[in-house]
Image 1 (cartoon, one colour):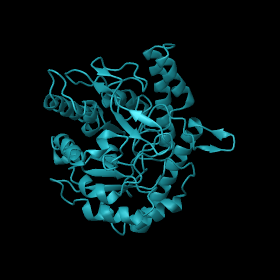
Image 2 (cartoon, helix red, strand yellow):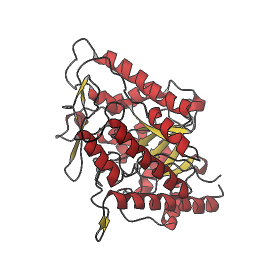
Image 3 (tube, one colour):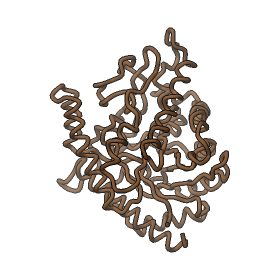
Image 4 (tube, one colour):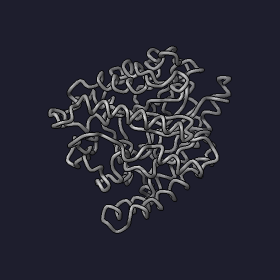
Length: 385
């Protein structure tokens, strides 16, 4: 069987698809026409990922506005935004290169998804000959839709969180019902919550414990057997080839991260300066019994921000180093992050001479995934897995 492998979720959207998103925002094409281009990109993503030899496939999140906003808007610019949200919402993150991403703002209740991740999965499953996973957004991210310091008249924060948790649970359950093999919960806000960035109000409010508790209120609704296949992803961001919280020490996050009762974790590590420290913290804090499940650590061995393609030998070496700290029966391999968590991302660092941009980054993403598959095979042989 070998060391288990998983992709986080997203792939760079081709220029054709990004242009279609922008044409949709400009009113030049209909939503149905946008969906045709999305379907085309999903089909190609699945076919190319299958060719890498990866055992579990995603559609690259080609249909979603972003990893965080797919339930509530069709595009990053806010076209198709749910009626009871406004585009003037909370700052999500300030990235190292200075660019910013924002969330919409809830203006009235009740809170409901207009799109579930299973809606995407149902369209993609017939395109795949292999099992598929699906990424979903965490309630801890979506709780930031509610104003930080104000109550919405007639719709309390308590009412909102009740509705939010029900929607997040429904999102996960419907993915499994549609046929997903695994479902991972994106939790990039975990590390970001510890940044204490004066430019970003919510990051200075010690929200990590609240985030963990909110997420567990959803995760704990599932049986141990189901939670074996429910994961949590953490990373310092990877938008437009720039992170948002790389300077936050993992020692502040990982002890709390593993308090979530998920069955596995997708953990950025390859772009860390001290990888052994990350492996050691995972080995120390991942639980062999998290309310009935043994937590598996999928270690990031591919850096989506760096255009250099890792070699299989480098991947193998990283796995062998991780295996010194993490029991091999609870060790998996992944990428540090999704390759393009937001639908509009021109991948500015991905260039070799005149060759550049999202289409080139897309090609490199599949090469990186292939190297991870091959490196895991080498390590599995050495470790006897």
